[in-house]
Image 1: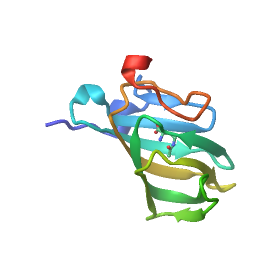
Image 2 (image 1 turned 120 degrees about the horizontal axis):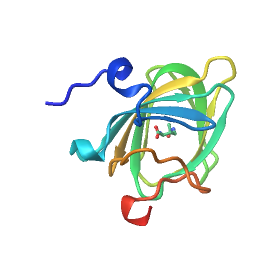
Image 3 (image 1 turned 45 degrees about the vertical axis):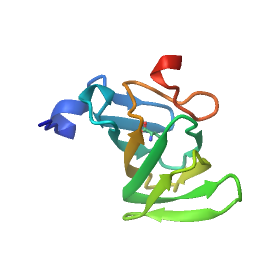
Image 4 (image 1 turned 135 degrees about the vertical axis):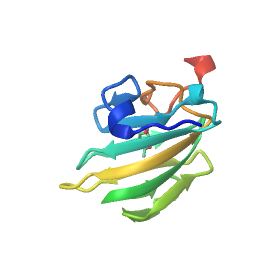
Length: 132
Ligand code: 9YT
């Protein structure tokens, strides 16, 4: 069994990755052998992230804050608030916007799992370990 606490075991370690627009606290990584990674991610308030996970599927569950997600292929905009989940089941290109003042706290699951300290490349993607 794997038991970790965000505050005791993740924050301030290598699994705590701070990027310009977000901070990703990675509770499970590839090395944990689960087949997915599990992140507690803070999207900084007012930020707009352009992402395209070409190599991963991702499910995202908002547990705090507010914002919206735009599907690039058709321009559809979905409001996000506490309790909203979105799943990028089609390597969807998207724009995530966190409202000013609050930001968003998201629980994210990636398959295949993120291996460690990945941050986005120019397309808003994570490379697979083989191509890192
Ligand atoms: C929700 C989202 O995709 N945020 C970008 C950071 C990423 N999910 C991560 O590594 O936690």
